[in-house]
Length: 242
Ligand code: SF4
Image: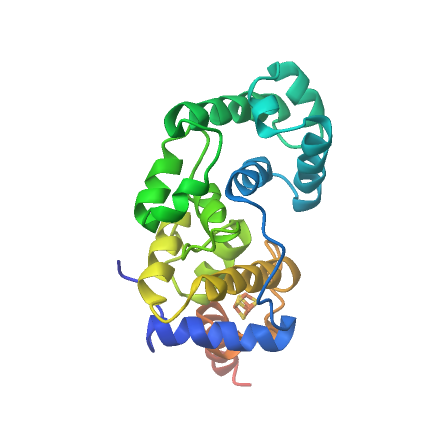
């Protein structure tokens, strides 16, 4: 696909990673959940603040002895456990159904078998489950103990990559995923993990939805939005003879 950054997408990714490592420090490892637990964790995280979805995940694990028990629980009971996440009613029903579907399709309620599948195949397998898009599927593969090469795109990552010019301004999550994956041949799964958290952190702290603090951004000299705004400012100042 056609993307906008000009000096080489692969070099751009490495530069972004290096610059943001200077800001946030190395994020080379983290405690990993097993693939099914990460799937549930990511499922709950959709359109919900991380803290709330993490709390809901912990409540689920404290309330039920196993994911099998969640799959067999009454939806209303699961909904009560998830009450603070966004769309708790729909999420509870979808989660119970998703777990039942995994059990039926895999023959057991376990996603460890994904380790033996190529990433594109594993993504398709997961995305056939109702409520599962590329973000949940990629997080299951990359964030879990599977450590597969899949890049997770959330709203913060999407916004930064659009403004930076890595993709077009109207690109969607899938387009960012495709652009990054086609440009990251030298990145291993841990690099992709780190890149996700760097871009998310930048989106939360600096390149925010309603205000981009470009003056303090480590990427400002490379960023298309910043370059365009500087060009507009220069044109304006010439017009008024400053
Ligand atoms: S320079 Fe500004 S617009 Fe570009 S990534 Fe940084 S904060 Fe966002």
